[in-house]
Image (cartoon, rainbow, N blue to C red; front, side, top):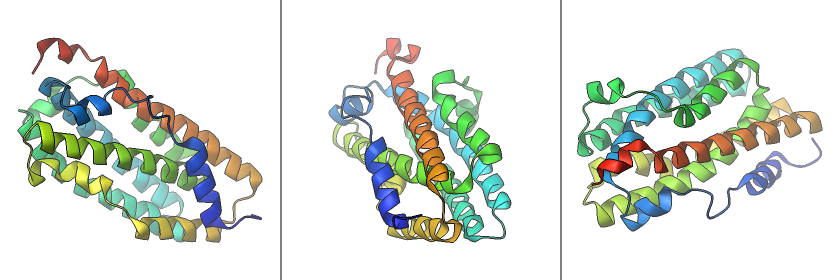
Length: 224
């Protein structure tokens, strides 16, 4: 790899950054115009996503058990487990118990992301997956920060209610350093970096599909 790993990460993240107007739901939450029923649907879909993503990351950790990628992916899986516990408070504030959230039907547009991550867990090049996830985390973290601000400002949610979004919105330099260390150990060539870009493009597309599916969800017809 001719470029330094950190520079590769920054380049891929910049190349895959979503456009300002591509996400149609987050601006509504930030402005307080999204109905509470849509927030409840967001919580229900996230229950499925977080659980699936945690298992996918553990598969990746097992695939990389003998190199730094194992600890990296295992750490991400631990984070998903922590986030799942925080999600319960957000769902409850939206009027959903864990049982009620689990009973909600999956929305295909919301579940495309975890389905693809599960595919990557089995088939993806680990270095490429690190690049793709790092790019996606930047977008997801920005969305979570905007949502947390909107929930506090317009919906009266408190810190406990917003903890799920705050968790992902916080800068994570240690995670970035860990990703760099994995890439240094794996020394991906141009082909593997290209695979990472491809994975990242799809993850970003499925990320936007998640939000925009909720923006168009039938739950909107019930209003706040």
